Image 1 (cartoon, helix red, strand yellow):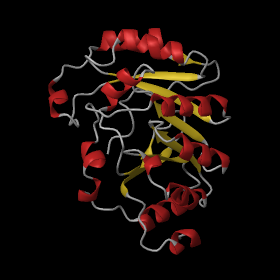
Image 2 (cartoon, one colour; image 1 turned 180 degrees about the vertical axis):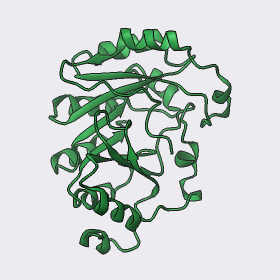
Image 3 (cartoon, rainbow, N blue to C red; image 1 turned 90 degrees about the horizontal axis):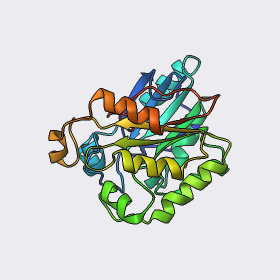
Image 4 (spheres, rainbow, N blue to C red; image 1 turned 60 degrees about the vertical axis):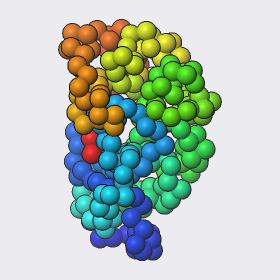
Length: 253
């Protein structure tokens, strides 16, 4: 059954480019569906969803009514829905999409790079999200962050998003992808220090797949021993948090 709010949106597909009906690893401790939204303001060279970031218009829209049908049929069997990208918060109509999803009585997790604290604050104020996974790309300086994000970043926006999430009652996970030559032990140490009082910070490992910068597809991955050591040294887990499954940043489209 398609909700009234979805019908009222007509042909607006909200830039949705993909949908996974069931994931056991995206939302730690929960079974969820995943909605992929196209477009992003960053150009991270190691991004593993380059088409979704660079050329979202070249990808077919995933029908909103199909997602609604899935949620209507499965809302009792899933714990929630993750909305990821790309970067969902660049879309002004994101609140409308989240209201449609919320209409099926499910919790919502937002994946974000923290580049739009204004949108994040609005979503928190209107109770449209229950959890946030925020990627912290690099140490919190403009130079370091811009190098990893692939564009000039106003580091104040990232810090503002972190502060919003620090003060919130939402379920929050901060995460950083360790990338050879860009984000290694010294960078992780700096990030951990900046996030020292957060309940959860996880380290994810770069995967050599299709990447936005093709040269990164040829960079050797960190070996398992080194990755495990990074996680042991730099991750933060409060006593009541669920340890996330280990995966690359974001969902893979």
